[in-house]
Length: 179
Ligand code: SF4
Ligand code: SF4
Image 1 (cartoon, rainbow, N blue to C red):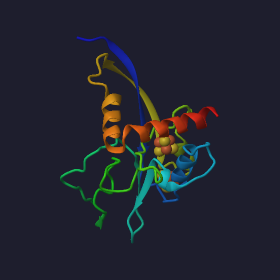
Image 2: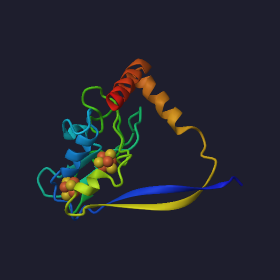
Image 3: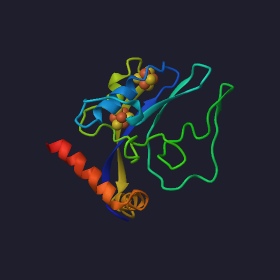
């Protein structure tokens, strides 16, 4: 048996019944991740999107998850309270079949980073009706974490966008951070 180590699990609880579709979460997320920080806001750059039914009022916030280079062979479709949503509406993946969770200029995937460096995720702070609440808990996990997730992720990105483009974006981001 491997060594146990402590891991912090961060959770944002979404209470869709409370969400009123104000989109403050999208605005603050895109502003926080703008370069320079807070210089602009564009919900298309947000790592949270509020999915709404086109005709009836039901709003469901969805967080950007992992990038995937391949489309799913099968699609999912949800009906909630008799309201039918678009195919893949609640999927968290940044994937080739749609524009969600992609940086509009570069096409690079977006993923929620829980507002790294902040004491609380900003979308949670800005949600005035408490549709989003933040929880942290500690769990014990095995030391061995398996193959390097980071490497696999980078490899897939490099295949799709070319290593040059990724290096260029990273360099731009770090210049903005330090400059
Ligand atoms: S800020 Fe809260 S209420 Fe407004 S859209 Fe986002 S989750 Fe819904
Ligand atoms: S936790 Fe931060 S990065 Fe994630 S969706 Fe909310 S504001 Fe965006």
